[in-house]
Image 1 (cartoon, rainbow, N blue to C red):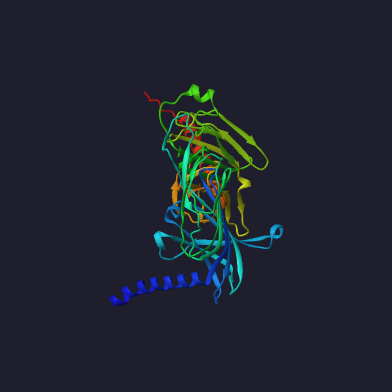
Image 2 (image 1 turned 90 degrees about the vertical axis):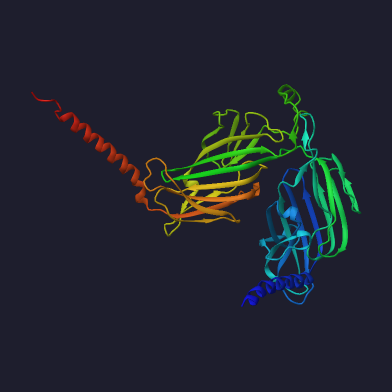
Length: 463
């Protein structure tokens, strides 16, 4: 029995390897075009793959390969199948999930794209993939003075890492400006201003890799929220209150030397060019009661622009943020209940709200979303379009008796594209809305009776 138990995992591993090898032989990439955007500190990669089934059996999944350095910083991965040409193109979104396969050469990790319909022998499909990487630009030098620009390294491969044979491929890399200090040469390589072109390359075997390093100037704000706690409190009396607690940091090259406020204000285009003092938060429409404060108190350096479709809050921390500097603050606002809370025919209610961070071009290392349901809510459930950790808590507020159920959602490595709607469903009996008014009425009535009794009772001591 012990031998059988030991043999089962081994045979499972062998079977996965055989399936992986067989699928790799049945598929080849006819053409691959990769466009890497390094304009901000969030690396965006657009990948177009023309895939052909050269085997005899249909294929239902396509594998994507990532080196371990990219897989550990992968924040978002989306895929869609494209049919038609140019303006008549139609897209079908596909499910992407980590493949249950052993690591490949040099720690390569795989993700699987589930095709909407099986790809038959000799058939071709075009896939468009978008993935984003965080913390993938390394400042060099690691410390800069107030008057210096920020230079960073980006490491990748000129050749697409893939478990399949690639017949033809090309890679375009776009930098924020034409100030490129150096870049690796893998012939053919061409440069035109702020764009590098690697390829075209032909007939590369599976798991081919050709490392390249690009050293360039990037003075865009490296705004990273180390921790964000968003509390969404629902009140059936007509409002939703949002409280957001931020721990913000500048993740670029660390500032060295002495900070000069005079130089910073007199030469805004040259002094502290990689720092940032303004932040923009895109809030839902019809916000009200907006406040912005830190540990000292309210901060008045903010501007709120209201629109019928959105609200924008532009604000400044108390001091500009240089590399390695941090700031802690709180943003709060109210929203009308009817815009976000709805009721199903079976009586179940659900909140439809946006997940993610409202700040533009910001990475959140750890995001915690807390949805505080009204007292008396039962059977909460959550529908989120991507994997998150979730659990329940209890919160006691004013006049609460049994406490309020809190749905807690946690996710690491969050980018602006995670601002997708999510839903929280729950059952609620309207009788619980009368609990607090009845409690207040009963309290005042007993207080009134006590006062009346006190005034009519003679407490004097008789002779």
